[in-house]
Amino acid sequence: MLPSFAIPFRSGDSPTLQQCLAKILLPRTFDLYKDIHWEQAAGELQTPHLSYPNYYLVPHHGVKAGYLSYQQAAGWEAVEHLFRIPRVRPSVVQMARDTYPRTIVDLGCGTALTSIELVRSLPQAQLSLVDLSPYALVAARRQVQQAGIAAHITYLHADAAHTPLADNSIDLVLVSLLLHELPYENAREVLLEARRLLRDDGHLIIFDPIQCAVPWPSLDRAVNRALMHMMHEVYWMDYATNPVWNTCQETGFHNIQRQLLFALPWIYQVVHVTK
Ligand SMILES: C[S@@+](CC[C@H](N)C(=O)[O-])C[C@H]1O[C@@H](n2cnc3c(N)ncnc32)[C@H](O)[C@@H]1O
Image 1 (cartoon, protein in one colour):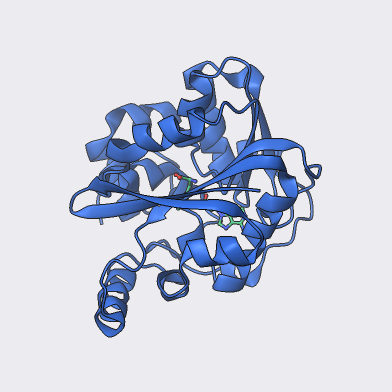
Image 2 (spheres, rainbow, N blue to C red; image 1 turned 30 degrees about the vertical axis):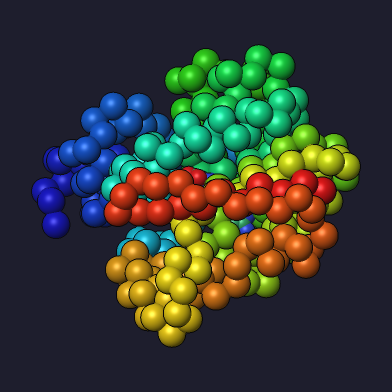
């Protein structure tokens, strides 16, 4: 464990590995968050009496408190860098921008760096950021302020599978690095919710790690099992064995396309569908 003076996120807490990495790898982000009073800010964004699905309340990514902790939100950008997400983000943003959306929802937004980047180049767009973690929304709000786009954003502390947003109202739903975090049934519910929110012909863009990378199923399963343990992912095998494009088809989406994005050694996929 690092001495506590190295991690001024909140006195009295032990630093997580993610936080240590954030300080070393990303001093800019560390500075961006360092004066946040996390509990107070989370209280401002929290939906009172929201109930959390059971799958959400377990340790994730090696953080004991799971997603419902400021540590996950504060350390997420360091994890992104380790998995070289910034390298592929411009391609995801470009694909989303090419749909010319004016209303956008980012389900499971986390720090929202992809949708923020998108909205920076779309002066007419309005973006709703949805996450079950109020701490993620706190981090996203700080990133939004830094990007100077606060007037375009609303924050919603809600389950991505059951939002209070109106039917058929959205041009583009973004689901980035969320589905691999969910049990299959919940992932399916999120896709159904995306479909409910989208206007006819609206677009859903799903960004996540590659599925079915290895053509031999038993080897594919073994590789994924190793990845699951390495990354402390709880529901990874559900994700690895249920191709997103099949679930999109079952939940009523059309024009299903998949594109691979390479940030070696990692490979990602974008599944782009329409309602
Ligand atoms: C791996 S992070 C990805 C964050 C972000 N979309 C990105 O691409 O960087 C997953 C996020 O999904 C959120 N999440 C997980 N299950 C959720 C659910 N059912 N509803 C809303 N947010 C959820 C977590 O709190 C976390 O912030």
